[in-house]
Image (tube, rainbow, N blue to C red):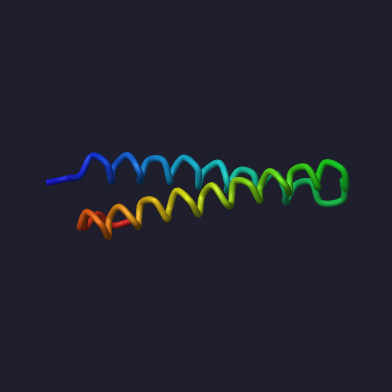
Length: 71
């Protein structure tokens, strides 16, 4: 039986991870533009933290609930 909560947490993590990857790509393209780079860097750092929180929530749920969904 699949766990709906784990699936929701996995989808949330996937969405945030894709946003983070996009921000990292944007950051790579802004090398040499100091002011834009700094703003993009802060955005990427925020998304990195959000991504870690989403993954942590999924892992914590899996540990507490015993879900065996692969990440």
